[in-house]
Length: 136
Image (cartoon, rainbow, N blue to C red; front, side, top):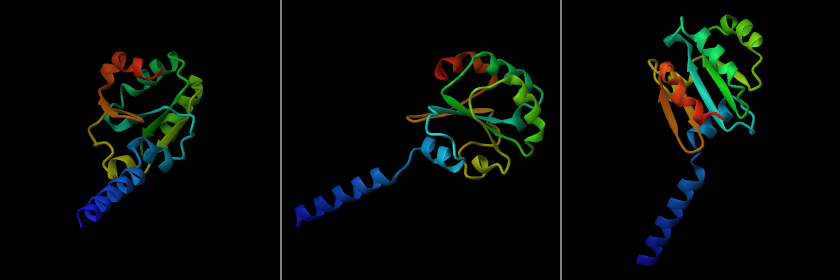
């Protein structure tokens, strides 16, 4: 009886481990982000409307290659001209329906969220210097 119980617990544990995607994989699949992406920087445009242009210019200077930007904004028209002028070489995806906020991946107050395979962290835009080392 003990052996059957232990076997059942082991099988349930293994099933739970194999069925669970990471937050990174869930976001990547939901927004059809390419497999080559190692990190996703979520930018909540509503938290910093006045500083976002400067922040995007700073990002463009870094020549980042292995990630993607996901901008939460009800209107992508606001950013399309500016982003195309920056010459970014990584994908820029828009969450105009605010899916990440509705599904509680990030909160309305969060400025930035870095989502990677192993972890996620929320960051303030003024902490950009500390974030750079995670994005190369």
